[in-house]
Image (cartoon, rainbow over all chains, first blue to last red; front, side, top):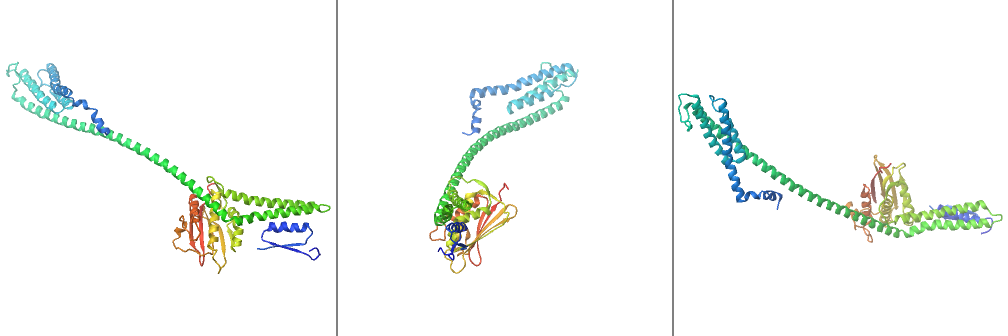
Length: 38
Length: 422
């Protein structure tokens, strides 16, 4: 998960949850992409 | 004893024999006294013009007075006495005006021939005067009696009306008290139903609270991570904390909404914007609807006027209808489960809210039964949801009706008055 190619995908229907998890992942230097489930 | 009987009894002294005798003596002495007085007056007038016929009109006054004040018997007695007196004065006139007519002055009732028509006319007139006076007296007495009886009856009816009014006031007070008790009972029932509804929505509500709490935790941990950096990423820390605060406020708002929904107390009318209220209610049920695969469409007409009513009851109304629609679609497997909520304006003073589903529709063609208490088509239903809806709508001066939707489902339509304080 630490390689330059690693990316975390977040899928949730709640924008606030997606945003907070994206923020958390970015704070530990993870690449993140989020998607709405609806 | 009625007032009329009491009134009649107040003249009981007339029934005492002594007073009856005294009254009789007074009445029958009156003709003698008045005819005597009239005779004296006639005699005095005859002295002023001794050669004229005597002025007998005073006797008519006497007859009228006696008939009027003493009644029939004394009246006829006064007629007889007046005739005798008239005869006397006409005889006296013969004696004084005809020198050839010689009669003993001590006995002057012998009447000259020329005065006989006069005496006959006097007799007829005296009798007629007495008869007319007696008739007028009887009519006057009847009028007085009728008036007295009328007054007594009016007093009796007034008393009856006062008593009826007091009874009516008591009944009205009792009815107002009963209506207040009924309103309290309805409010309590509605509150119990709200609590029950909230209980049924526990999973959905827990999810609604859990989501922002998860966001709070994630943002807080992110803020700590941003702080651990060297140098600390303060801008990210600030953004994270702001996001955590926003999420916390969202969780608090959900809790506040639920607490308000369960509040005990009298309805508090205020201006309610249905276009804001409906999305608020949706936040409580959206997870529940999503887990049941129910698609929601809101078609809210812009610039919809507010209605005047109790916000909590309106929330309960919409919540009940949404839950009812969701339950109606729980068995649907062959088509899309869809809930459509629309708002629209109707004329100047009404707004329409429709809630459509694609559920099983009506089992009974009699839609009026749907709104009766304890009537339910659900096996585990209490049959109170729609009954409470109707009570709430009618308490706000509106109406609710259900119509079948083609090809499947039901349309519930609420018609509510626009608030007066626009």
